[in-house]
Length: 78
Image (cartoon, rainbow, N blue to C red; front, side):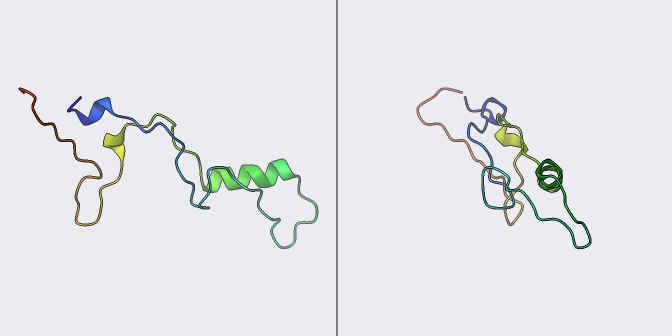
């Protein structure tokens, strides 16, 4: 369990909108009636969901180029 490849994210990631689910967008200027499915597809294309069980080893590094996660163990013989 001291290997980053064995750990994954369980919960959904937060979208750029700051939510877990997309909200329908608004029609662009000059567009008259646009179906809600088309507006929702645009939003998903701009801000796609990440995999639910994404390995934590794939997370972006933090400021200072430090890894996002550090694993430590105590009392084990490795």
